[in-house]
Length: 126
Image (cartoon, rainbow, N blue to C red; front, side, top):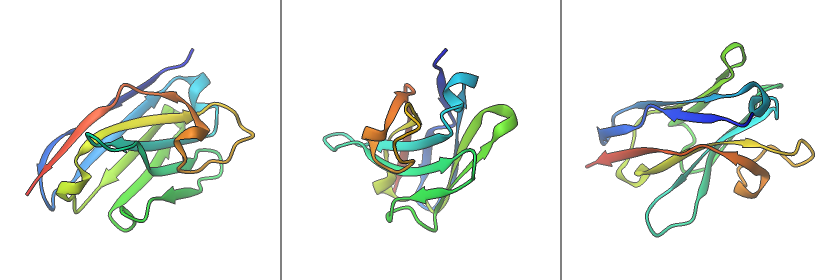
């Protein structure tokens, strides 16, 4: 069963922090690659961070390096996105995703992910 459930979005002032959570089903988590993506109105969906849930390797967009951290809890089939020093330009709908096919790279390319959550809104005010 494919299941991805995001939580933790909300509104925060610039400079603040939020933690997003993504709880996955056993089947979905078994793809060994989970990622966070975001999409602002009128813009394309972009990769924010990804993690190899088996080996622990992480990947970040340049725009969030040093501010966001992706982590996982394999016992809970859950991936987190810790967001610090938030900026108004971080405002977007954030989506959790899982790789569908293990032969594609674990990266920030949305095309490499076949399973998507419903999204959680993050709004950062100045």
